[in-house]
Amino acid sequence: MSLILCIETGTDVCSVALSKDGRPVSLREESGREHARNVAVFTEELFRETNLDMRDLDAVAVGKGPGSYTGLRIGTSFAKGLCYALGIPLVAVDSLEAMAVIACENHEAGLFRAESWETALLCPMIDARRMEVYAAVYDTALHPVAPVTAEVVTPDSFAGFIRPEGEFFIFGSGAAKTEGTLPAEGVRLIDVQPSARGLCMPAYRQFAAGETVDTAYFEPSYLKDFVVTRSKKKLF
Image (cartoon, rainbow, N blue to C red):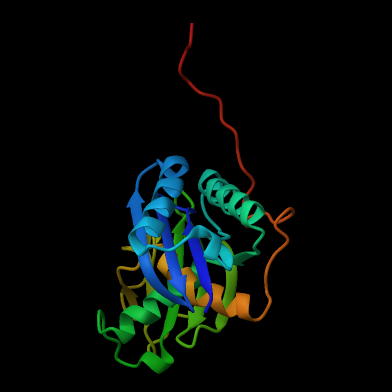
């Protein structure tokens, strides 16, 4: 049995899940800007609720982004601290892939329908501010069709993937800004948000395959440089 703690903090959602053999057994998540406090509180609550001991963990998995610079730093720092303290490996899961996993699970559970699931494409999006999103494209077997990019949303965005013979599902924290910009025909907006739930199965498979990262040198995938701005508020 593999017991893995999964952490996703790359957006406004702070999400922590405890998984056994790729299946979530308990989940805590909340939107807001309290990630630095909530990630530790949620972790403690998960172990208390399940009557498990943190020392039984086999690995810690973290959503590696892309996403918020601050959010990713908080999740990564917490995950690294646990790995060092417990002497266990760190697994890094692409946050967009994790959302595509959730979309597949939701479809299997009957939460939304597709005219032809086999030919559909999945496009998870994370808000990158203004009209820009971090996005990737997957088929419904979760094979990557287009790599992770920072995309400025225009009417021509994803033109090569929006086809009359197949549905193009878009979802995530950046998906709403595409409404009224992308063509309506062939595009479907579904409700899938970033969650540690989506990390559970990819983390389990990566851990089983020995695909861990160097805890000391791992850095999240920010995709864009962090920009420091000067506050307009006058202190004196």
